[in-house]
Structures are given as C-alpha cells and as structure tokens.
Length: 318
Image (tube, rainbow, N blue to C red; front, side):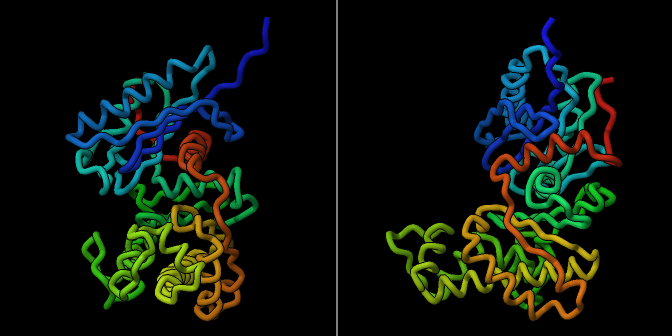
C-alpha cells in the first residue's frame, strides 16, 4: 500500500477584484488554485461565482483528507454569526459566508478572518514575520488593511475587525475617507489616494496613464511631485506604525500590497519619518520589512486559521 497523503486545507481569498480558492498543505505549499473575477450583481450572483471555483477545486482533492476551510475576506465582518459585508463587494451585505461554505463541506470546521490578518498570519509562519512576538501585517494597496499576530495567535477583536489601521486618523483636517471620517491613513497613503493627490498637485504622467505604476516610475525618474506623493504616503504609514507600536509594543511590521511593490521608494519614505515620530526606545526598536509571499499570502494565511488557537468558529453543516 502507498503512503497516505497529507491532509489539505481549503483556503478561500475574497476580494473585490477576484475570488480565489486553493488547496494548501500544512507547510504553506499551495497545491492547486482556482480564481475567477468577482461577479457584479446581487448576493447570489457573487456566491455562484465562488461556489463554481470551490466545486472545481474540490474535484482536485484526489483522495486527500480535507481539514476544513479557512476564509480570508475584505472587511467589515462579524465573526459572531459568520457574516461579511465587504465594502468592495456591494452585493454582499451580512452575507453568511461561513454557513454557505460549510454547506459544501458538511461536518468540517470553517474559519473566517480578515484578508490583512491572514496575510500577517501567513508571513508569521512562512515569511518575514517569522520570529516575531508581536507582529503587525499591513496591506498598502487600493486600500489599507492590517492584522495583528500576538505570540503566534491571530488577534480578532470582538467581531473580527481588529487591526483596521487604514482608519487610524492621521490628519483630522485631511481628505474625506470612504468610511466617512476625515484624514484616515487610507485616504492619504493608499495607491489611489497617492495618485489622486499627485494629480491635484499638477503631476502629468508620461503616456497618459495615471496609476501607481506610473507614479512609481516618475518618482524613480526624479519627478518631485511623485516623490512627494511617496513621502506623504510613507509619513502616514509611519504614524500608523508609531501608534500601533505604542499601544501594543509591536516588534515587527510586515508590509505588502500593490504600493509595497515599490519598496525601494516606500521603505525610506516610512523609516525616515518613523525615526522622528518614535520617541520611546521600545517604539524605535520596531523592525519594518516587506512581505515575501506575494499574491498567495491571503490563501496561505486563510489555511493557517485552521491550525491557530482561539479562533472563533461558527458551527456549520453538522
């Protein structure tokens, strides 16, 4: 008889652009993945898109035991009843994602966490977060998200929304944020916010395409407005790190997301003001580094939810 194959976790990553699912081993290896563009429409339309991906993926299990499912989702969410209401998926408001996924995996556990928290958990186990006692994972992209891992355990908060560092107010007189407040870090430091600010200051992208890639290229070429946009974003992220470090004594911050792809520009834009903001020694000790797991980090972290201690779980399919 052949040796039994290791069990796998079904990992799901829910975003406004795409829905992804994968089979993930305990060492973080992604065995197979399937993706589809996030459908536009009502809740059931979006669900059919995800259900189709999951049905295709489950057909690839090939005799392996399945541990359960972990779900990384854009916020907000409510772990108490397993629902999500992603801002970037209008069709899902209080959508019972845990129960619906559980219907496809009867009798197996289903865990839910924020997408940035799952990134942090993945980096803690398999990336630049290894060895950290108190980790903050940040995603700096079309929005700004965050998640805490303390002593190896993900920190959820009462409803699963802890770590929402994109809505730290860093400038009360700053621009209006999508959440309704003024001056959130997301309204200043996210990719679209950087581009919008640069355009308002008169930046004219070469080739006419105004996006983060063009802004980074302009900054590398010495365009002062593009350079200032990265400086402004980095200073806002540094303020977030300072506050999080003062509150929780973070020892490491791992930063991923689209804007972090320009790490050569973002890293000095963060660390230089951070040296001024961090007055106390324990805040100055924080280590800031880039994420290493790329687009798979949400899936790897979602799978890790199944092994994490003290993870809220809504019983389903039993």
